[in-house]
Length: 367
Image: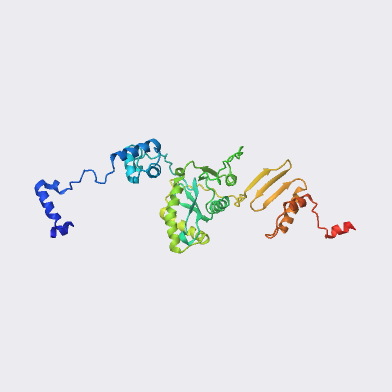
């Protein structure tokens, strides 16, 4: 009984093991079912049929999808892991741990602070269930791994990158280059982008005026430093925000400078070269980043769009004054309860808006 309690067996099993040990030695203690086919083993004909169907029709399918199609179209019921084992034995599936990983050429760190700054936006539930999902703009120095700029925004947009870059330049100066992905904020891909400005966005033009290069990576692995930083922040920053009870973007942005200082003190590394590659801003350089775009409408008219001043019509003729008067009148007429009339705007643009018959001017003309 004591031996059974120590081994966790029944009192009847212990005498059987003793007899088997006396007859066959240590081998007698092993189960006789070891190495034998399972009593619940599927027929070999079913295995051959399933593997043949997968080879002919679903060779590029994964085990899960192939198992669903076998049940749906061929009425063959097989467990997913069983089919995975069959496909592996038949050479139709290669386990992830046996696949050859893609080799990416390593890129060494830059030597100086500010020589290359990787930027990216990461959408995540930064405030968990306490606040809305938003994006975090991340600026990471390539040479030191320091956090140079962080900002919570609703979505990635050119205006938010302008604001973040302006804050970066005011705090650190001008870096030599920014390293980003191929988001439409950084690069243009639609047809018609030809000439010297081909592929350059408003953000790129603003950086060019400040003599800052913008480099677009061809893969996420190429800018892996900022990608890994996003993963780190999704763990570390989220917990710091939770401990402080921060649930809004405004309070989060107020906390980010303190977080960056603590992170850089703990995890930043010294650069190979102590030279700071941030040239200072000159007094004549503009930090507001006015975004502008020109479109030719006819031989004598050009429309220029500015974020700060809205839509303006530049012309050498009197059309400018007429358009400004029309726009002002339209704004006075606008109301959420009044239907906007395109014909009324067109008649006002042409300068002969028709008044109702009760208008004093029409009554005077009738006399």
